Image (cartoon, rainbow, N blue to C red; front, side):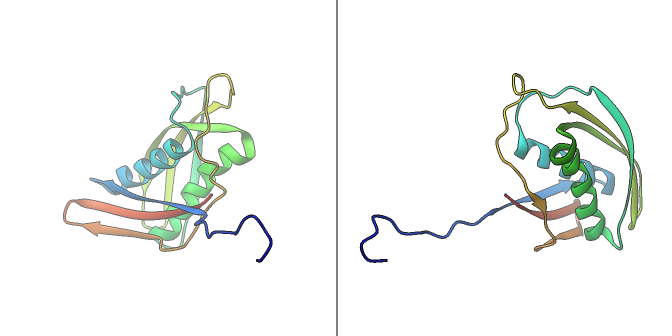
Length: 139
């Protein structure tokens, strides 16, 4: 606009990951790890462990629901996910043990505030080498 000493530029408010796994379980575990490494690269320790059951109508839906549940540990409970172990996995469900570390500003530096896990361009595919998934986050 004339007279203003600035102009707006478009900013993409999302961040994407491409995740790989030798097995389906490894894929979902690696996606969790990737998401929390986006949030913080500070060392994390498991202070609280709990069991989590997730359902989805198919593998991509399951991936979104899984990551949304894990993101809620952070956004809703101020706990960072330090470790995940998927015990059982099917096309429509998983059972996992999740280890979290309560947020401590003295120990943890936040790199990216992920607001949401989206369905935008979500995919979970079988490949020659195992599994691959693409996930886009709102930031």
